[in-house]
Image 1 (cartoon, rainbow, N blue to C red):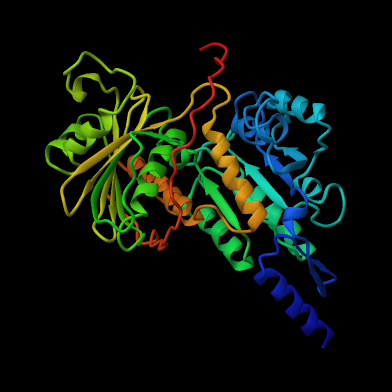
Image 2 (cartoon, rainbow, N blue to C red):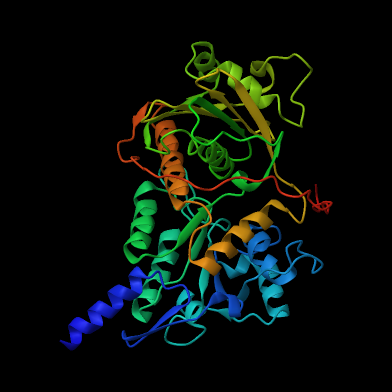
Length: 426
């Protein structure tokens, strides 16, 4: 009977989601209202150097939202730090020491504050920078599953769960991403992930009308095909999830490279009109006015995404596109809308403020500010296009990407960014 009672108490603990709910020996449960104190968070990061994701996210909890001690204070308290690659993280370690933040040698110690059980109210898992090997598809194998497993182990033995934010895509492969998602779901753990691109400024400030019929979406991206291509996919998905019926998953993914990109536009695989609408929003010039894209875009890659409900999307990536843009067509009217998705490419990188605010909301309420299923699906598409590319740009059917969800999240234009402080060397 004693074991049955303990099992029932633990199950109730997990079902409640346990933000601000604590279990003592699997029996006594009491609530600690978040509003009465600032929640404590642990940060588990891969590398923490100047302008790394650890810096522009975690440092906001120490140096204000403008990273200069002059802005708005975060409503989270950084209680501990674990750095997976400390040799590449002297800046972050110095910042932590200056603010008297304890730096632990293991994730478990950071989560328990050196004790035996979970001692924080939320976790920031920032696995985005550092030197890690590449997978067989050419993606960086950040230790996201390993670090998330460490979080789960501490939560399980503490009979307590807390919200977790994990930066950008969930993993470098579908299997690990789905495992992370499933483990969180099984425990009722609030989980949030993703990019700043859905949150950032849009010029003009337009969005897909909720419940509308959309036939096609295009986004453009630059940088690296994984790290910044991922941002382009999040632009597509934050628009796609608003269509009538919500999200029902992706049927197939295929890449096109070099001259085959322009052939795909010529034969209507992806609408050239949408691509030109998206690229027209760029703030950086590619060539002389009127020059065709074929003449000025360098080494392009086109990712074609076929959704299960018939929606079609394309991501045009090239190293010299510089800007993130998006365009979409209303299926009922044929009207095309487009926008620049602007990010502040200078410190304080103010778009990250709105990411931190979303994290704050989740940790205070126990409810994700936007659906983690968006990132789950985008992670799967990202991995699929690397597989397609590796296999000679073959069309890859993706029956496993049957991700269904409805999103109640709405984008709002942020306030104007403060003046950017130049990045040394740029």
